[in-house]
Length: 209
Image (cartoon, rainbow, N blue to C red):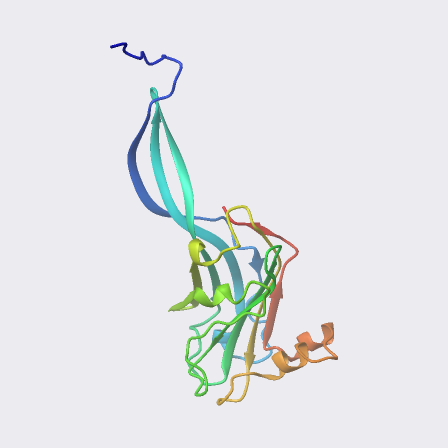
């Protein structure tokens, strides 16, 4: 029987370890504290960041060890000047566009009677895949997370643009406030921003990775 010899030029790949970690730089949206239209720190946006969490694997190629990061979830974090509101009628909105889904609108309602709180929704062209995400409140931060495997067709390399966030106060029973109603009406215009409690946006984009 002939034995096949391994060429010294071929890499020998060995999985050494895998660990969960977050991947992301400074928040894409930065907004000054104190600019909300009502004196409620929990509705005053100070930053919004798009990032991923995933695993880092150490791979040995011959005598070298290389770290390979693989994203497994998209994480969007809105930070506020104060604790996230629990008052019925308070709402939080994160808006963005992806090539695969078009415009996506995520919302979080604080203890709204007619909605299961917290809730997510989107008006995208991807059959509501972002409804598969979850919200988490951590002090002054509101965090939305969705596993990449549940966000298909969004994928590694997808570019998010038109990044925007808003806060609002509305009817305690339905949650929607004047900012939302005017921005979604047929006569919506940039002037509708004046009715949100706080609005923050950026011309920056973010790629899943």
